[in-house]
Amino acid sequence: MEPVTCTSADGTSIATYDLGGRGPDLLLVHATGFCAAVLEPLAAALAPTFHCTALDLRFHGRSGRSPDDHRWERFGEDVLAAVDRLGLDHPFGFGHSCGGASLLLAEVARPGTFAGLFCFEPVVFAGPPEPPISVGNPLAEGALRRRETFPSAAHAYANFASKPPFSTLDQAVLQRYVACGFEIVPVEEGGDGTSVRLRCRREDESAVYAHGRSHAAFVHLDRVACPVALACGAETDAFGIDALAADAGRLAHATVDVVPGLGHFGPLEAPAAVAGLVVERLLAPAVPTGPVPVTPTS
Image 1 (cartoon, rainbow, N blue to C red):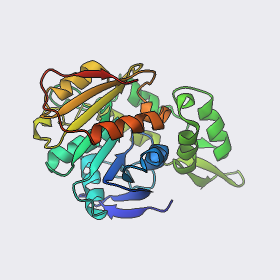
Image 2 (cartoon, rainbow, N blue to C red; image 1 turned 90 degrees about the vertical axis):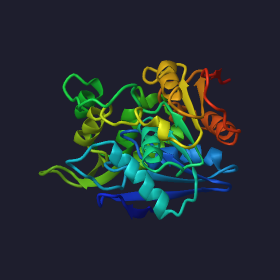
Image 3 (cartoon, one colour; image 1 turned 30 degrees about the vertical axis):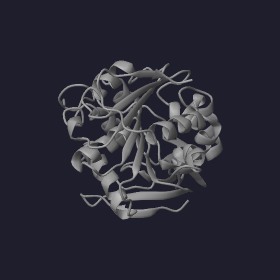
């Protein structure tokens, strides 16, 4: 899958992909540490209803790096650059985790860009922005310990398939992650042949996590002009019902769903099941937010 590149507001190169399908345009945005390719199984399930496109956020996949700038507002700019480059006119958007926050930041920056958003556990903390935190941040510290290089793609797949949270992912999702989330590199000095290395470098992933509370999406959710469907996994250890209810309370039109049997990685664990909810919510009439209705989804 060869990307079509575009340039974000600060000059960073952003890779975009046409994932096919028919119907209204739907832009898919991945979570931290992943890449557009992991959303291909979701796009396949959505193909009868939506024409899906996707992008690699900066630091991820085949997109470029802005080493000294890990502000999440830049992710919103990446989304807007993709919308403009692909000529998407009032598209829908789907975002997972960081991807959900990126879509909201894009809509906040340019209200009316999207016809509707579906955000699965968007990384939007209630309250004002906080300074970046690296020390004492389990995700930021854990990212620095990640293994980046493997002898081959097969070794990488076997490693991830043997331990959570990657072991919970749909097999096709994990295959696409290994195929597209890694690049072939020469082995270290003194060796022969090649190895594979994560495209999302661990120092970048760590810095992204460190900035997770530093964006102002929550403060400005009242600027979002489109309906927003929020969802979380019933087994999540991240952004559950309380977080989504707080977000919904600041949105003009929102729904909240809790999906049984899934965790924070729900769209990558059960893409077909999540696709069904995406279709239902994005194509349903907008509902003004009052007391937040929480729907357990079967």
